[in-house]
Amino acid sequence: MHDEFSYFLAADTFAHARLTNPTHPMWQHFESFHINQQPTYASMYPVGQGLAMAAGQVLGGKPWYGVWLSAAGMCAAIAWMLQAWLPPGWALFGGLLAVARLGTFSYWVESYWGGAVAAIGGALILGAWPRLTRRPTPLRAILLGAGVAIVANTRPFEGLSLVVPVAVFLLLWVFQRSSRLFALAPAIVFLCLTAAAMLYYNSRVTGDPTKLPVSVNRSQYAVARYFLWDHPDPIPQYRHQSIRDFYVKWELPGFMLSRGWGGYETNTYEKIFKTWMFFIGPVLTIGFLPLWRVIKDRRIRPLIITGAVSGAIISLSIYNSPHYLGPQVALIYAVLLQGLRHLRMWRIRGRRIGVAMVRAVPVICVVMIAFRAAAGPLEWSVRSQVATWCAKLSEDHHREDLIARLKSAGGKHLVIVRYTPDHTPNWEWVYNEADIDASTVVWAREMDAPRNAELIRYFHDRSVWLLEPDRDELNLRRYPE
Image 1: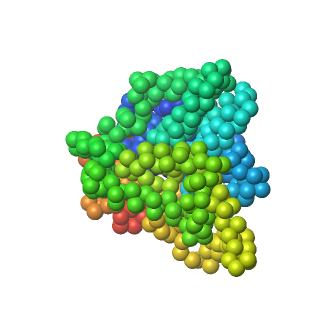
Image 2 (image 1 turned 90 degrees about the vertical axis):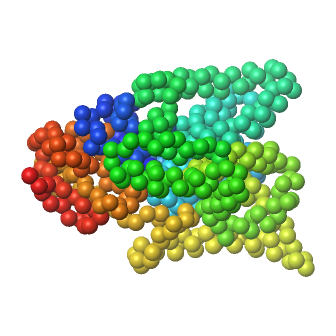
Image 3 (image 1 turned 180 degrees about the horizontal axis):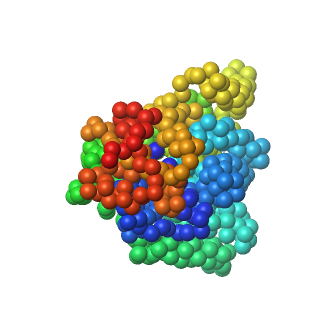
């Protein structure tokens, strides 16, 4: 999907020790979704996911290893966070649930969309917060600052919705005894350094320290905006029909249906449903049966308040996907586990029915993992339009197969892509590596004849191919003279 290729570009850029790339002379042929071509060639997204994938590319040769490492770090961070709020055995149980639900077959570990890196940041914040208030140490303050820095560079808005209530709790803690402010000093210093680094990165990518890459991208291409009260921007002049279709015919209608307080209720229900389907599902829903008891429970009352405030803030935005809620994952599982603790005490006619119900949860999860693992060999379809723990969200794409074929043929190649007027803009082919001229295979959009001729002259030392993916995505033929 579009986001993934943008993260690929970020990872490839960082892996080559660069913050951004110069704009290519033929950049109009290379325009694509969620990627800036002007003033520099870079991903529009914050750096967190790209850095994780770059680490995988540097350490293991593939960005995929960065996804694995971040998923493992997420599960460990969730268990560590839960240890600050729940008994150790239940914290371990929560870490294992994260492995089962998020670290096996979810799209968080089967795609490059992210989620795990932001979840690490959220878990660090929620785990360091109670530890710091109980026994302040510089390390705990730095972990708190690191968590804030991570969510700021992965999911800034959703991270802010989590940081705001936590900051209020910490301020109240400081007001009780002003000397406690010194306990937060390491976190403040860490965040100041992070802010300086972010400003420097913005200046390199956009030319303005205060202007985010995503702001530049949206101002150049997008019409829809983010929040319920926003109005659409004017439609810009597009150079490619498929890009116009994405922003005007696909993204804009959804925004117009959801904006305003009239669409607030429907939008909120949709967000709740998506969150339930991905993080909880039918199996874990039993943990929310004693929800009223959990709400009244003093042990995690600060988490309940934090979650309520964070959810209210997030409800003001229009767009939502499960990976947007990465900073809130540890909180969701803390509330779930506290519900299971209360459920475990249930008795019916003296029988400990609650114990049996809680013990059934990990058994069912293991059985579900076995079924999902068997889906591939048995050729069961696991594709879905709704993000669940086990579903693939997209069809298989043959782009990598074509790249492998061209590389095996030797030499360098230029693939010019021609779409039909009814092309689906979500199925995009034109994405390139950070160093376009050094790439074995370069992908370009077909434009008018003079510009196409200029493109071919620029890449005169390459074999030039025409691909019409809407007609046959496996058939490459020589580009007509």
